[in-house]
Length: 280
Image (cartoon, rainbow, N blue to C red; front, side):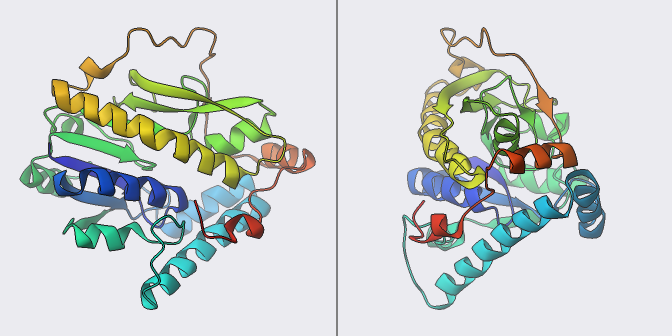
């Protein structure tokens, strides 16, 4: 297997999933691609303006504080060589370096330049791990075995952006995590593996996202193992798996109204005490 991983730069939760994949498949990973854009096809300033217009200052500030806190704690650990393999602040880049895995930045994975670069890597499988760009047909056609994605929701419900936020804003009592094949739609590929997750009264967006990642990593590894055996993503589809009763839905960026509902319900985006141990 030659595994190419697509992820997002400085992503709090992708960091955990990536470390799990590197530990399992380190020698088979041909590269990790980090999206260097906050929102596809927009500069940072344009993306920030879009988020502010849609979700408002409170949401953007909370997400920004969480991301910066994570980033600076990671840098602190790297500078002082503080290793904590099970910790949220132990950067996946350290583990990637030990396995000589190249880390590549890309603002557009569908560009001609990136397509050429990917051809040279000759991946047999692409795995998207909390990646924020849509893959188009030319890129999807490169890996022989296909492409898969992990999504922190019980698909086909809550396709799209920020599902952990949306399920809490909508007062859901359950959510889930799904591994699916990738097509040109948004979270519309065939479901390969799925697990339901209970939403707890004390959950913040952070704790729910963490639990989705913890439960999702074994699903992702199991899916990759099965794909290795058959050398085809479609062969991994479990015909016994049914999504009957799950209504399809799609959500884009959080809105002012949804953030107000979220806050009125007493939910938090995160609590600093949740980061206290540094454990994920």
